[in-house]
Amino acid sequence: MQIIKYPARSEWPQLLQRPVFAQDEIEPRVQVILDAVKTQGDEALRTFAKKFDGIDLTSLEISQDVIAQAAHQLDSNLKEAIGKAYQNIRKFHESQKQPVEKIETTPGVTCWRKSVGIEKVGIYIPGGSAPLFSTVLMLAVPAALAGCEEIILCTPSDHPAILYTASLTGVTRIFRVGGAQAIAAMAYGTETIPKVYKIFGPGNQYVTNAKLLVAKEGVAIDMPAGPSEVAVWADESAVPAFIAADLLSQAEHGADSQVVLVTTSEQVVSEVMDALQEQLKQLPRQELAEKAIENSKVFLVEKEQDALDIINAYAPEHLILSISNAENIAEKIRNAGSVFIGNYTPESCGDYASGTNHTLPTNGYAKAYSGVSLDSFVKKITFQQITLDGLRELGPTVEAMAEAETLIAHKNAVSIRINTLNS
Image (tube, rainbow, N blue to C red; front, top):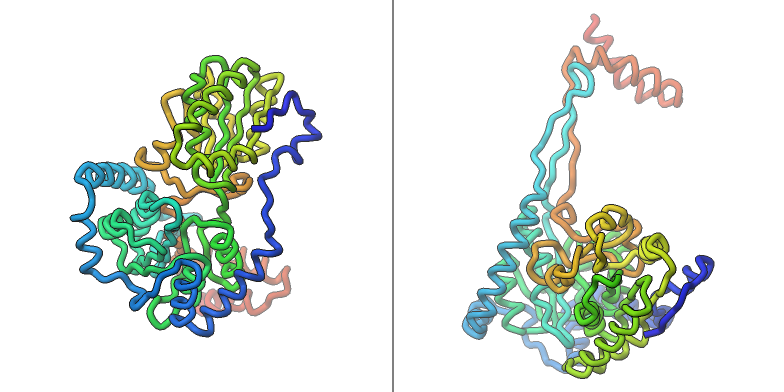
């Protein structure tokens, strides 16, 4: 990791940039895939499955028989763990439901808002180097709670944990399709895969680019999420081995991940670097983690306010506060996807089973975006109802405003009603 000591604030924007990849090269390749799926449908999906994943797909959809068998292929301990995580995630997201509240803004004028589940949603689950069945929980649980009628899942993997978790959480159909072509299939629809109204899920640079491109065509997406990242703010109260483990837990996601350590203590820097090197040797995914570490940075700053400011400027996907006054500082965090408070709150718990959602904004988007929640799967429709007396009360206000904007038909829509009432 690059150690940056006492950087001037003018240097922060440059130093806080994420790793940059050849976007100009990726987008044209992705566009070719999108166009092929749009015009050739299932045929294009089979062609890309052979080309990119090395598999011949006789059927794009995974059958119910195969899904049912998945439960028998998993260790009972894993099924129990998935069940516990499911309950926690469901409990936390269920608490986000809000009752309909009718508000009388003026006597006789009543307004309210109602959450309605998005009818058709698509979930993408990567299947490259790790079977991310935890992401199935994070996306399918709130989708089902929101009342989404059709929840389809695309993944290049047939790992039984993914299939089992999908069946547990209420996914309606599963397709063995991956990459940018899966995003295209859900965005446009094919002979086999239905078109959806909103697409969720993480992925590599190609998947992320595909989501951004279909969003330009009117398909909603969860957020412009990219490679995973974590920032850790540590002081002398932190345990160096804990910090190293937290940094590596994100670094092992992939070479394009980034981890950041912020501290006011040179001793913390030294001890964490030693622990990181020791733990790195023991990781099965050491090579991936090492590449991510090369893209990562340590910021040694002079005072606590500098640490707070640099973190809010970075706007990390995950933020771990391993500092003595963590709870007080947490109240001052303005830009982060999810915050983990104290030495005994590893980011891994949020990734899997504490209950919060791990689908979070990356690449600085936490300055404006929230992570996935129950609200991500609903539309909020407003309603209003006006009585005769309410219209008499509110009507003159609308007439005056409409006339001032020279929108006379707007005024007349009120005036004709009031004149009829008066007559």
